[in-house]
Length: 234
Image: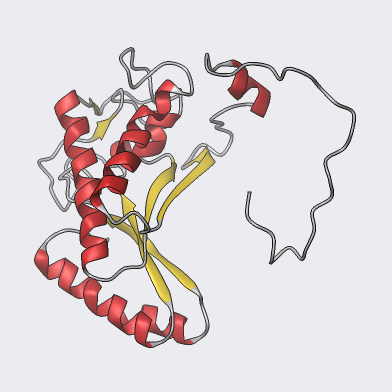
């Protein structure tokens, strides 16, 4: 793995985002072949990756991951651990997983924060939180898998509560200038027609915090200046 990532840095890749790596929660993953981001042996291995990438002139962030109900009961690396999700629903609507309690939620938040702190400690250049593709964070964001009636469910804003708490805990666990990236998506694994919101307007109108603009204007916005590579991302 060290040489795999180092070769990419040596070839000129500016920022490497690793493959998904399981945070330190027993229900986070479903395979013994996927790297973990907890445990001293595993972190020592990741530290060697970071050193090699830096020596080759690159930068690197780990993608911190919990797969939620994509995990099936009995899968490794912890076959006795339950498959967890916001409401026990899988992306396909099957309801054979376990709804998360507040203790479960708190444990996952702490696992992401601890992983981020470890990432900074061993020299990574930031972290990416995997909130896309139908995995755990995304399962809270999507109404198809989040049917909760507490603070973690409801309208689109309420459904961001879990992800927002993870981001806040991660931010508090690392230095103020340590980059934190959040990956999200419309589509889900095995559900490419899924949508967090059907349209931007429907997203806004479903939130009690949204209010229509005070006025409208027919004047077009000013044209962007500079080359695409020099403009700030939106």
